Length: 108
Image (cartoon, rainbow, N blue to C red; front, side):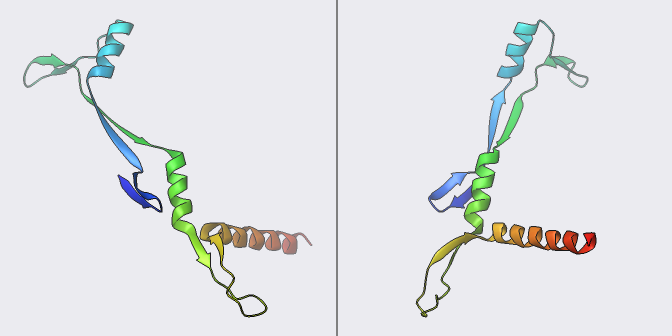
């Protein structure tokens, strides 16, 4: 699965087709049979493995890139002053501030 980062399209989650290599290696080193018996064909075989891999680091990077925005709010003199912020951090800050105020109000 790919996503569009500011620096280009990159892989967010990969899928690796591992064939039966891993299970064959495990079977060889452990000495235990990992074969599957198919009742229809009456044959034994080692299943193939499809391994999805998703990383937390790329997921967080995608969230930060998606939330990044430039704010061009004017300053006191009316000049546009570009700044940047992450939308979810502002939303999180509002929630924490609201929860804190509720706790203060209820505890008094």
